[in-house]
Amino acid sequence: IAVDLNDEKLAIARELGATHVINSNVTDETVNRVNRISAKGMDYALDCVGLPATTREAVDSLNANGVFGLVGQPKSGSEVRLDMFGIHFGKTLKGVLGCDGDSKTFIPELVEYYRRGEFPLDKLITRYPMEQIEQAIRDLESGKIIKPVLIPPA
Image 1: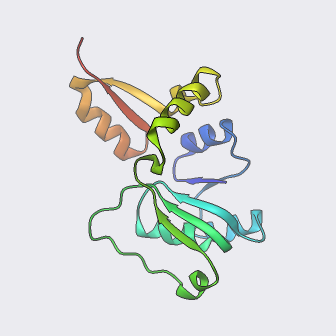
Image 2: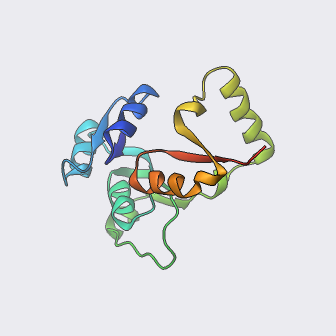
Image 3: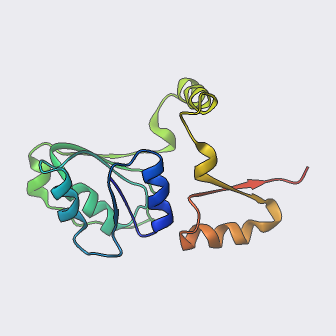
């Protein structure tokens, strides 16, 4: 289940395998919609945004033993309010930094997935010449793109 505010990103998520997509800008009942899709709650939830509201929604969508991963970079000092009763039953909250794995094996695996056509990196990135860094930042902040890649001059 992919949740975003941007319909183009949701279309990419569906193309890449999401069975359900939710535009959370359309409703303020994101958790209820997720829980209707998966009646028992989610086994895993990732927050790729890093805002208190998205973290809360992701944690609330978990089942009793679900695992939450914070991937998105929150602002320093950000705080989130959570239902401690729900965590008490076995939920796991984890920060994820830099793929959180062994890069010596993880990066070559990703490269191999890409070579086999199983990791469509080109659908996730938008290339910009270095001199368009400001445009890349604007496009990222506006939600127009997923991940900017800056290309240095030759």
